View 1 (cartoon, rainbow, N blue to C red):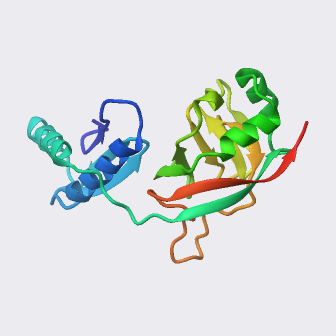
View 2 (tube, helix red, strand yellow):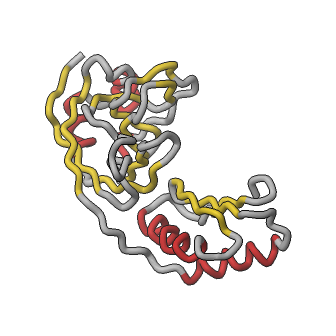
View 3 (cartoon, rainbow, N blue to C red):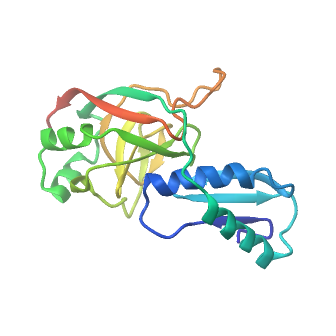
Length: 211
C-alpha cells in the first residue's frame, strides 16, 4: 500500500517484456473500475490510485490478483525510432568507469550497446524519460552510489540492466556513456512525449569519440 488509497502491483520474476505487456493489459481493465482514479506504469510494476481510501483491502487485492491471472499480453501499436548517437565525448562523464567495470573498450561498448532493438517499458520519473529494456548483459553497470549533481539533457546512460536518455539536465545516478541530440519532451506538441510505452528504439552510431 501507498498511504490509504494507492497500491503497487509488482509481479514476480525478472523484468521482461511479456510481464510488461500483461501489466498494460491488466491496467486497461483496472482503470475502468469505478473507484480507480488512475493507473501509472513503471518498469514491470503498476501503481493503482483510487479516488477514496481502500477500505476492503483483502477484497481489493483479491480482485487485482484475479485480474492479473486473466491478463493476456497486450498488443501495442509501436513505432521504431532510430536515434543517432555519439559514444564517448564530453557528456560521457562515466565512460571510464564503465570501461573499467565491464573490461570493454569504448568501440566495443558502442557496438554492443547499439546492436539491440530496445523496448520502451515505461515513461516516467521525469516527463519524457523512457526506461529501455533489452540491453546486452555484458554492459551491466550498477547505478552510482553517489549520484552526479548534473548530467546533461540528452546524455545516454546505463543503470543496471536498463539504458535511457536523460530527458532533463539535473542530478542523475545513472552512468553516462554518450549523447543523443534529441528532445524527449515537448509541451508544445499534441503528444509531448517523444517515446511511448511499446515503442522500439534503435541507437545508430554517429560518432565514437575516444578519450
